[in-house]
Length: 133
Image 1 (tube, rainbow, N blue to C red):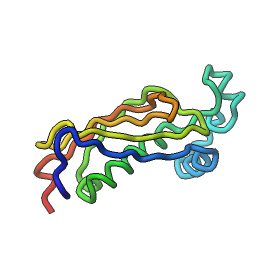
Image 2 (image 1 turned 180 degrees about the vertical axis):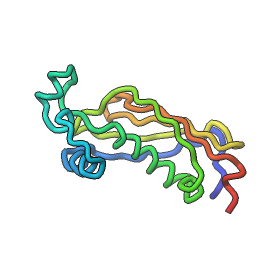
Image 3 (image 1 turned 90 degrees about the vertical axis):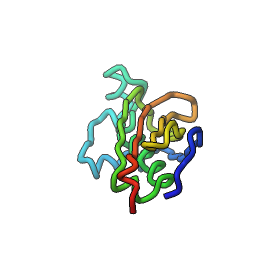
Image 4 (image 1 turned 45 degrees about the vertical axis):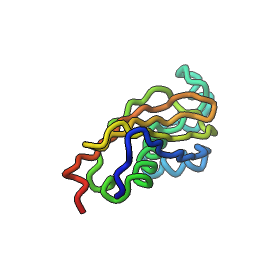
């Protein structure tokens, strides 16, 4: 893994969160809650319409880190997610990050919709001792 410099931007990593993505995630997570598929059910709970599972956006952040930081991230990275707002089904989600430190490697990240709704903020770390081959 090449050491990233402080201030280096990571990403973007983009995903259209359509019905197919939501259905595949629901099958994998065994989570078929109607708020993910039925606009009326979601609205009855005060949501704007059907919303994606939060971890779809969380996984997009993980995908970005794996692509940018490589296999050591997959083996030894640590990620803290804070869920801010739900993502409506049909939205495009963009994950981006910025390196804030190098020892340990620390990255501040966010996943937001193309319309600017911040869905998740996150902090990722990879300790120096974890970066050895």
